[in-house]
Length: 376
Image (cartoon, rainbow, N blue to C red; front, side, top):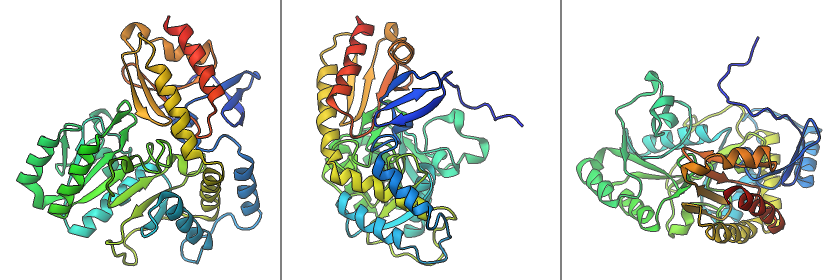
């Protein structure tokens, strides 16, 4: 059997990882400023994380949600403390797409409606409903297509108000990333998120804050949506939640009352997943990583804005987009193969930085030095 060839691959095999560095099979060291799509939140092979998982694996690796799993309760309590959403409820699942699927399903159960507002540039996942609210027709299969999704211009308050005025009693939910990731590190404005909140309140629609990539402390607050000073009804999370272990969840406002069988999962919230997620929160709290993300991120953004060759620098904290002109389209590739620095991208020419939240200023300077050489 062969692998289904859907991933364009760099000819690099990672055999070792520690902190913000990885090494390939030839012993070459790299600086990791992408963290495997914003997944590595507390650094590769963090000792506390490794210990937590190893200890748990020696006790119970898995049992289903048909029995009590105290680790789930501990995780919910710790997540409430660190995120500031103590009165919310937690449903655990396995991936960002699954989190968004469950959030949309929950919203539809709540108000009995079908229509969902999403925005240009959005990416919410590849499963059936998550991909339907993703603004990329190429990855939406015919079976995923639905007339229930309304795509509106990002950050356009007038279009949002007009749509609610015309169809407000049919709208189930509004789903939005606080900062678009795949869409090019484009932030939803404070006023726009506040407008979503007020219209959802007025029409009894559900405000879903997709925090899969932009959440979990990456921007200097736990959820990037928090910068707008309003609270969503449901927050979805995944990537940084398990530092590489597949774990995801949705934080659900108290107004939603659950019933048995409403949502479900086989692997979600298993013992190992909870151990991984608890380790992440414990390290984030102990090492003050949310503050570090803000400080080192602000430093990077400030320094990057000094480069005249850069068209625009966008983002918050350690979620940064560097938009380059066409003539500098080679920079990302050369960062990897000439300077051994992993970064991400968004089409056409945006470099995405999504490193671990404990990135040091020294690592930031290493990147800035290499970047300076390539954009001269």
